[in-house]
Image (tube, rainbow, N blue to C red; front, side):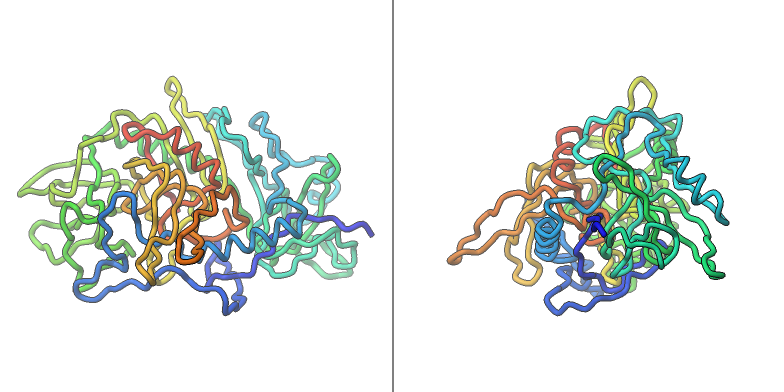
Length: 470
């Protein structure tokens, strides 16, 4: 039987129980894999786990999972898969119906089964499409494989031929899901597809093997419209406390992290009432806020991510380099680990790129990418980051677009190699097989380097917002 090489991601699981859409990826111990994110210091005087760095081009460690692990996995995968990447980029996005599956195949297969569901993500009618970045052509619906060893079968039963294997955390185009009965046993199966020799090939996996992922363009559109409405209705500014330059926020009961996981460092205190300053939370650097009122040296504010209204000291809110107009938006989906870019053309929003992304780990160390609406604060063709153990420069990230504290949209991190005591730059890398799988960074949004450069060249400080959605 001819073996079909599918999207194989030779990926040892290196997370310590990461939840994906309610499923838990099983642990696969590896003594050579280490978390590179430090534990947060929440004691009196703690800074939320981040040492204070004052150089503008230097940040704390941006990798929760050691990027060298991902580099090694990527090298092994490309070698074993003859240069193929970990997702089937076969979808040609020529119009809004690009993700429609083969209806004949579904009629003969899924639609005759029970509880049939087709995965057909389309672009909303209020969003135009003009892709300016086309390095990768990604299916709008795909399955993230969470099982360690997954056969893809020619028919929805385990006695049929295995067309190939999809390794853990690989991604395959998702067409549908249905319940099938075989030999008086009922099971749910996903229908997958890929391109082989120019033709679409279909295969099946049981539903316990993976988690559906999609580009939620409808929700992205809603988030943009909500932000647009807020900016039109209210005066607005943004939180400004990069590296605590406008003051160190007070601690909450001696802790440097609030109950929502936001760190004190590089944030602003947000009081529920000016009459009781013992009760407050933190708003992260870069977050856009609507100004409702002012009193006693504070602005009364609200934003789209947090319920309620808050009082923030004026020193932490800036109107400098504010958004003059909302013309461009980067939207990042933490649930699906993907993102899209939109720009306003004559009053209509146009999607100009969509891609996979990697966001910050949530877990106990609280290095999750903050949810909310932010503005582009700074752009750097590269910025350096520290090794948290030695406090020495470990490497750099190319094409950084900063939107909150030390959180950037950036390309693949580059770790220096040390040769005879000297740091050697091995050069930029384009790709990691782990992009778009599970959160692995420390706050940042990791992109393919070519897309990070696209963002860097396209985004502006005075007209570009960044929306991070759950």
